[in-house]
Image (cartoon, rainbow, N blue to C red; front, side, top):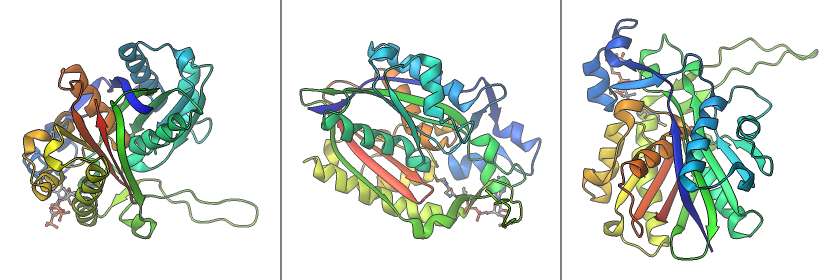
Length: 322
Ligand code: COA
């Protein structure tokens, strides 16, 4: 029995903001952003919400899988930017799509959130607790950006991606997994600002914005990701050359190039969406996977390596047979 992705979907906000648009409101340029990151534009919300985009991505994934909302028995959203503290984004999606038989909850593993959701779903499906899971990565990062911090806000975008995962007999599905976290280094990519104002204590009010030490995050990514991928590929009984595509979290083109170099793989095996999406944290991997799926790039029997990495610090990789 394997946990197999049988359908994908995604949803991006309508409004596109180019690097030139950003250059009109802050001291930056298309040249600076695109040469250092590969990002040319991103989608930002106006009316859209994390739950609304999630529900749309979920509907598209269910349609592509040929699965009805009633068949979903597990619904997990990886997000750090849900619309509310409670109810969770997953419970809101459940209500919006009518997944009345599902148990629904969010997890926060930052940019590795979708990958953590995939692994949790895999554990439930492998043990027979549930049969059909809907997993998502969804973010409205624009609401937690400091739009005065040009070194960080230009990197991120909004959107949602989804996959339907089902326990199936056969060789296709999730072959191996690796995940990890390093809380000691959590400060290099953080969004703080939940002050306490109970009757006993009043902590100073902090603004809740993402703060990032870009160079430390870069060093972490180019070390942890190749190591995790190698470990996962080996655990799947495969060699790096056997992998058809590396569908990685879309943080920065330079990170992807460095991972490709360290694994001695040509860059054409690393599809990208960051040029038109920017970094959408937990949503990056499922949006990329959906784009690949809809372009017909994924054929039965192909081996795909997935990896997410980011705040926490957290990282997770998987090798799947499509
Ligand atoms: N436009 C123009 N100039 C900018 C800028 C912007 N948007 N942001 C920063 N700069 C300036 C800085 O002020 C600095 O100027 P100075 O030399 O006069 O002080 C200069 O550019 C270099 O800044 P620095 O932060 O050293 O740039 P960098 O080469 O490290 O690149 C990142 C910055 C963010 C692109 C890079 O560190 C990175 O990609 N890190 C990984 C981040 C990431 O992927 N995070 C998410 C992981 S999930």
